Length: 187
Image (cartoon, rainbow, N blue to C red; front, side, top):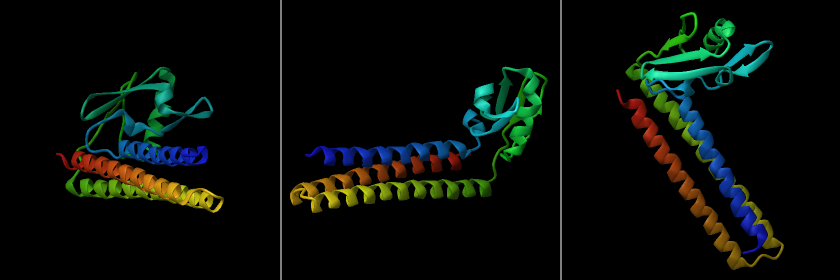
């Protein structure tokens, strides 16, 4: 196997790993009725004039499955964090208790659960599209190498290997989706 072929296979697999990692992050944002600190991921707070991620300025924990506690290291920015959570439009109404924000995570309705399942399926499909695009990029590269003199049998083996990697990552996406669906529909 030439260095170029090996590099191509590594690039294809890295790209597919990135798609899977992105999907996992997106799934963390889809709340299944159980409180997690990831629900506040991406909330940006105006911290002394610069937008800062909430995880960098506060401790976020979940003492039970129905609530999130946000405890800033600097108590003077509690109101700013509260505004940022409200502005993020996550469906949360934080309660300011002086030193911490308490967020009660409401139970979700059956219709909302079905909507979340649709959202999870859409994210999974985006990941599969990204995986297929990685496959196409790898296949195109191998075909261009074949035109430049790569042996036909090595080209065929490499294309088959790219397809195996693609199938493997597509199955991983399906398993993640199945797990997330079960998590969402569990009452």
